[in-house]
Image 1 (cartoon, helix red, strand yellow):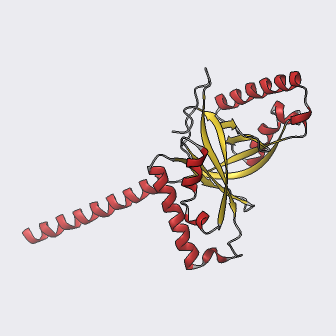
Image 2 (cartoon, rainbow, N blue to C red):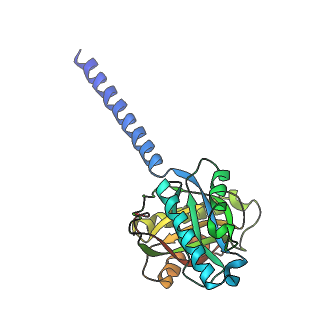
Length: 240
């Protein structure tokens, strides 16, 4: 009888251990679950330089009013301009039921309708870390967004080779390392298999620091990926 009780206790302990291990694995999987969003990369349109200052100011005010309304609705989770002289104006990231819904929301923006900006749409995945911004008053912070582009050191179909799989593991490990340092605050891949592979977003003191951190990525080191970094103004509080 005592032996049977001991056996039963051992079985219960094993079952509890297996249950706890499964629950932990599920929690870890849920913690790093990727959600698909829709990203609009806003490029400067034909009317960007040709619009008179008075008309430009009116369009910008209407655009800002629309952005605030979309942020309040929850459909737009983050938006902001690039603070440099490139042909990129800014980024919208949407949480919508479909790509068509996101595109329709972008197309109603006054700056898009006026030809001031041209949207380039991409499906983009990330952990759903985003918080609702405080919009009254709306305050902005500078982070550094890098577009990861496919580099020359890659061959068609080589992603399944052991060497590249090992490199991908090192790439992910480096992302985790930078996230734990609180330096990288956003990352995720594009889902349309174009020239753009994904993005990194750094919360650091300077563009140079962002460049130095990006250079530690194993994929960037061997020129399998290249990164194009820009200072990005975003609402305070959206990115933890």
